[in-house]
Length: 155
Image 1 (cartoon, helix red, strand yellow):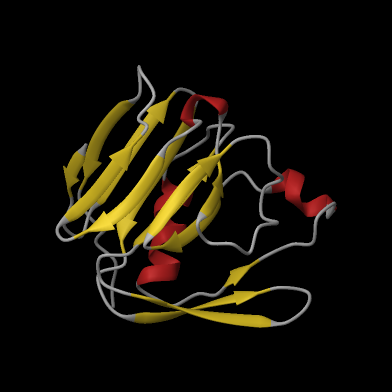
Image 2 (cartoon, one colour):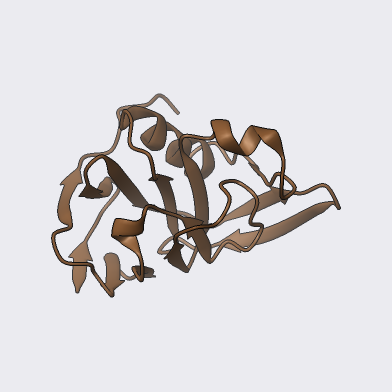
């Protein structure tokens, strides 16, 4: 399934959980900070930045996380497995050309940017950035999909 997307967001909902996806929109380095060191991954304009809220909550923090990465180049921080802070992460983010939603993994502990923690309702979903939008594979039944315009943030 193809979903056209410009500079706004694609919102996928299975209440109370949701997933928000935006295109990177420009070439930029994505710094991924781990306990072992730093990895730099390049993002292309059609690559994706996705934020997942497996337990639900307000949408705005997910939109802000996407913008912190794609507009301001904020690095991603990966916690070590078993870190107590993982329990407090209500929204997690991933970025790259393709992202798989995986259930049952600990939030914030995966440096592999093709994997994003999601609620059971999103199991098997795969997102790929393509020219002008997002390709969705394995879309679970009952998922609500809508678009939102870009946040009006100052440069």
